[in-house]
Length: 77
Ligand code: FES
Image (spheres, protein in one colour):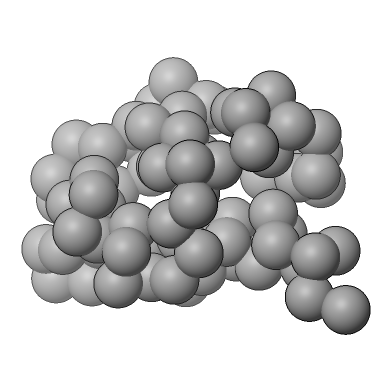
């Protein structure tokens, strides 16, 4: 899917601060993480491999996971 399609699936709360680092440890902005998810990174591990987000101390794992779940939740059924 495109990044715009992924963004359309996110609740308003998760669409904020797209150009701010989601992963502060590695300075990965949220938009980059969402792009990777849109391009098929549907697990935390894939997002880590592609963007290095959450690859530091792992403190943003829950945020990355929340984005993955929000984007793919509607496809799960
Ligand atoms: S903020 Fe992403 S690993 Fe710490």
